Amino acid sequence: MQRGSTKEHTSRSMARVRRVAVCATAVVATVFAATACTPPTAATGVDPNTAPRADEPAYATAGPYDVGVTTIELSDRPMEVWYPVQPGTADGKPFDEYHIRGFVSSFFDGLLDPSVDPVFTTTAVRDVPVADGGPFPLVLFAHGFASFRLQSSNLTAHLASWGFVVISPDFLDRGLRSVLGEPPAVQRSDLDVADEAINTIRSASTSPDGRFSGKVDVTRVFPVGHSAGGATAVALLARPDVPSAIPLASGYLVSAAIAGKLDLDLSKPVMWIGGTRDGIVPLDDIRNGFEWTSGERRLVEIDSGHLNGFSDICAIGDGGVVALARASSLPIPEFLLQLGNDGCEVPPNVPSQELWPVVNHFVTAELRYRSELDPEPVGLGSGVQASLPHVLRYLHNP
Image 1 (tube, rainbow, N blue to C red):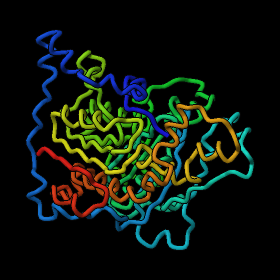
Image 2 (image 1 turned 90 degrees about the vertical axis):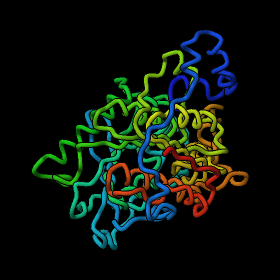
Image 3 (image 1 turned 180 degrees about the horizontal axis):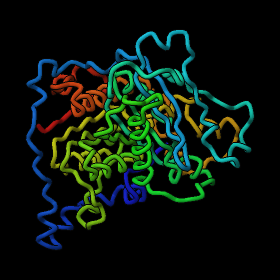
């Protein structure tokens, strides 16, 4: 379950009319505001349409590696790590599973029917050796509001199958347990948590011993974030070791930017991805992010895409924590119902599993190009839209 991309975005989610006529109001205020209301021209770069494999949906399915997963303890919270595994190494070993009940507050867990404990089975195997070769590019995944570090294991494991090490710490201050009444003892910012997560995997890679010794390219970090985590991903662009970012279902509030309340560096490459049926993050705000990115930019609009379609949430017991509450006949707070249930009712929504190949392809293709695993863009040309289901529109500059 996730919320909007910034604090302003979160409070604005339930009252979308604030975005109407933002620029018109600013223009009549001052000359500066009029200038600020003109979106920047995108940076130049390689036109993906010129690449030999421009229109190939190469990354919609799993890659050549098996996938491993392990948990590393940070100073006050766990961090999950997915990584490539040599093909065949994991044969015969059980796939890792998780239970969403493990991420709710003790009070909420005590109210649930003991028999209600849906499980999600991932495509990763726990604690197997890292693949030969490397070092592998590093991705940081930031989960959304009222969620948890494993929420998008379909995507994070998929990235590992294509040659990435993916770290995902729990952002406890806005996590599911905190929203359900059990916040962490010490409040920390997302950027502080991300910094510790990056430093921890960096230490593990530079250490002479251990699973990740020499296996992670720690010179660069590629952040991907969902909804509120998208704001974290974009904010990390301020770091010199972050070349690009991918916010999923995460918008950009132009009025806040004009007012100086958003200090975001959009001069680096950003891929914005959103859905037409997202009831929390308006697609217009995601389009704003694309228009206001002055670096190389891409916009993917998923027809029938919804907030939770970027995560495992709807696939867990047919609705995650909302399904838990309903199965135990518990009342559900309205805000949690909106967040946790967005896109989970089928019909009218499309099952998340049908949307995952689209998300997996575009995120993987972008990351492989930015990390130079692919020397030329693969599957990022305009024609790829025709080869993938549910892609309403795909724009890119260049």
